[in-house]
Image 1 (cartoon, one colour):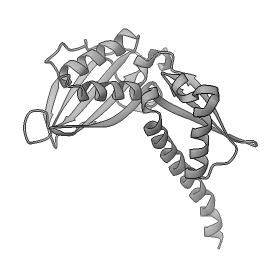
Image 2 (spheres, helix red, strand yellow; image 1 turned 180 degrees about the vertical axis):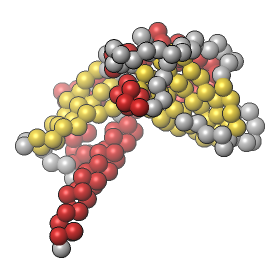
Image 3 (spheres, rainbow, N blue to C red; image 1 turned 30 degrees about the horizontal axis):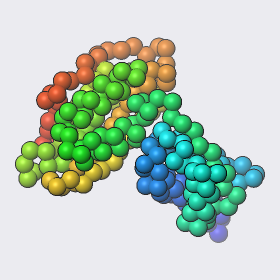
Image 4 (cartoon, rainbow, N blue to C red; image 1 turned 135 degrees about the vertical axis):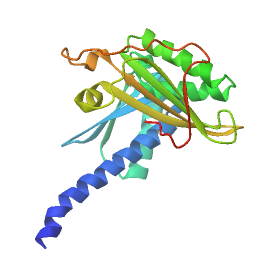
Length: 222
């Protein structure tokens, strides 16, 4: 009995985390056209407060707040949330938000732009916005029937430790093309989140179109 009592808080936490993951995925689908970049969730005595980060707030809010009400109703119905308070914030620098960049890459590829040109363009946008570094991985049937992935890197992107946890933001998405399903992963390291003690060891320049690191399936893309 005691074990069951001790485990119940853990189960509640896990259940809540799964709910929030599902909520985030739902919002990503619903607000795709608004340039969804993430959600900040906070709980209080009056209920759950959501801050939605998007590039086009007007599309979310809607005329006279109709959009907000529609989203709120869907969240209550789908996730059982009560007393949901929603606010919308515009992403100040979209080029440093990996989720926004992922969707831009996917959209560009859907329009027929070669993936290398798209990736290089995205890297230049990210670095031009003042990021410390960026990494873009595009995977799928790039050259043949066998799946490959190609990596594009600029600047410095910490790979491990506290620095990587704090300073590196990540985003992923997928895009269905005639050649098949392609995956897009973006990592962006922000200078504003770096510790003053962190020293840069190596800086990679943004690649030109046609450059990148290509590896076959099974070699691992982290």
